[in-house]
Image (cartoon, rainbow, N blue to C red; front, side):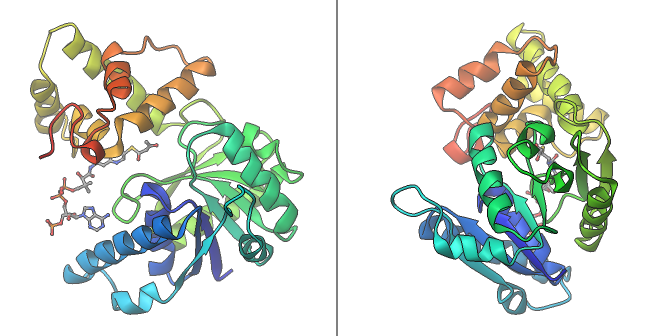
Amino acid sequence: MRKITVVGAGTMGHGIAEVAAIAGYEVWLADISEDILRNALKRIRWSLDKLYEKGQLREHPDKIMERIKTVVSIDKNGNYTEDFARVLSETNFMIEAIPEKLELKQQLFRFADEKAPDHAILATNTSSLPITEIAAATKRPERVVGMHFFNPPPLMPLVEVIKGEKTSDETVRVTVELAKRFGKQPVVVNKDVPGFIVNRILARVLNEACHMVARGEASVVEVDSALKYKLGLPMGAFELADYSGIDVFYYVFQAMAQRGFRAHPCPLFKEKFEKGELGVKTGKGFYEYP
Ligand code: CAA
């Protein structure tokens, strides 16, 4: 397997495409517009240059960029393009990283199932939606699997490989092997539970941190300082929420709650989400970014 198709070129998708290209794979990166794809290539180039400056790449960024090709997935009428269908028809391994909306993901998996060869594995980078529900849109649930990267994918070593109810052991084996070839540390999650492992635990930490601030027991800076300087986390809870996007965690919490995860959601998260104060990307979240 030398070719990988990554669908979705946003925060996670562009980073996953970069990781695959660094590992020597030919990558097709798909998204809904040329603008998004151009921006994704720029972000990949920035990251590759950073890694190269620090001596962390074996090849020059120019060479790695040559392995990434882009394709627009949807036309002006909202239909999948023929170019995208052709890319899928030559795909052995697809990694989906589109927005966290179940219907959108099911629609893509239905289409990929029609177009991709029978042996192809269809992986999803979902951080909160059940693999089993996404796989149900296909006629190959045994070849649908979770492959959950962490932000930023080029720097974060962990990949959760999640088994849906019908995912075969062979699909898990191939996905674990691929994650290792990407230079990552895979952890297999055998039960398709809300939040898998990391987000299930992170949800409790972020929520508890947020409740402490909402109740006036500690400030944002005090909680973050304690987490960083005592617990040794690389970022505080609120720094991490701002960095990844408050909307991202808001949707993760919602999806988990809808599937029976019992946690009393912190009102500050909802408030920030509704005000559009989503963190670094909007210039304001729990902190301000001038
Ligand atoms: N590619 C290459 N280099 C990058 C980069 C990228 N994508 N992002 C940042 N860097 C560089 C920075 O530019 C900086 O370079 P310089 O040394 O030249 O200045 C260097 O990495 C270090 O970055 P910072 O100085 O900004 O900060 P840092 O030392 O704290 O490292 C970090 C940054 C690696 C992100 C670290 O803070 C960290 O590990 N944070 C935790 C991240 C985390 O937990 N992610 C998971 C989020 S949850 C998720 O993703 C799951 C979900 O489902 C929602």
